[in-house]
Image (cartoon, rainbow, N blue to C red; front, side, top):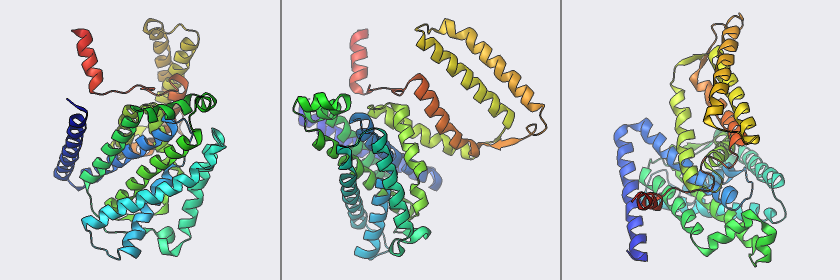
Length: 383
């Protein structure tokens, strides 16, 4: 198949997939429809942040700020420019464009300091930008202050998932071109990239602008999905959750970001209505994880890791966790205490981050991608 045939076929599959997701979500009911829509927005956020953090190697933890810029720009567009509270397709498309442009401008402003900052310093700048922006909105009457802002609501799942597919396609195709190689070269070594003629400044700012624009468009769709947002919807927690998705999936792996975004978004939602759990059981599980992760780390550092070597150590960790859990149940302050599953949701993220940083800092997928070519290669090898 020729170049344009593949591209047109991919576009057709993406549109059909987005429409199919919309139909399935609508058939599953209001709650499921909302969750499927939010899952699509998280995919866009994770993949767009991966372009900045994983592919270009800049450490940004203020992605919620660009999400917020897009949401409030879309709301302001509906209230003050379109001046309507009635949904229409032109209004929704106009909001997406406005949200994307506003967030891209914000990304350009934040991307400029990245010319001289890197690592922890850039992380502080992006985090500070998000908090300053949130405080400004909280004190701006035209944006609803801390009470929030409303806009015409519409759950357009096909548009949400089409944006997610577009974000994935842009990032994956970027990596397949010579332009994408310049992004990767900046991640690996800025000095060497600059010596080879790569315009490091242009690449860094471009990554911020593209990633921010997608986050802004996702924010505009969030505004019209919920019909109402407040500054607390874009706190630091949101930035850390999206960062966790990128780290868990693999910094530099788009496939990993997509799968991690779906998993880390849906898992807390499933726990929301889950049963209560004894506190001693939570303590036992955390002890088991702590011991077994420490043992695996030691085996890896000593270059002695194997499942045969790990098995007896896992048994020791399990016995220690059971003994400690039983001992904890004897304490009057802990015995009988039940923890709702919903309260465990925010424990999952730091535990996942700690385990990943200790055992596989590059993430589950690392820099690898899974696609149609992966399965075709396996079939060729097996044949």
